[in-house]
Length: 143
Image (cartoon, rainbow, N blue to C red; front, side, top):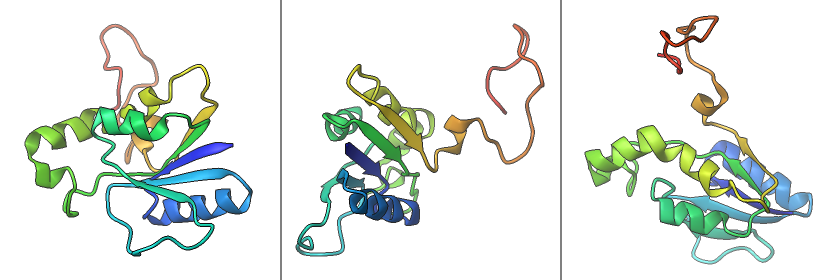
């Protein structure tokens, strides 16, 4: 299976990339940071540097993928991160960054997505701040 792993330089991303490659999948590792090596090890998964808050880059990296393991998270102070690119990029990351890979993968030929770190997409919040019910007077999302 052709799998894209976002956040490939993080703990979850490194482990997922290694496990998927060992299982025989065709893996493409993606991260916003540059690799720490000058040349890839023989047999290592393909690597692409991409900023997933840019819809064009996100759509490009998932093109042809059958599944995505979405393990990236915002690094506000990392070199080349959204924080360094100004408030507009930060706003895009905060509101749309996690959903861009999901929208990019919403094609008929895609199998699925696994969100490893994007807890907001899974409905988790650090404290219970939502109602047990949803009606027209309530908020649709946890606050």
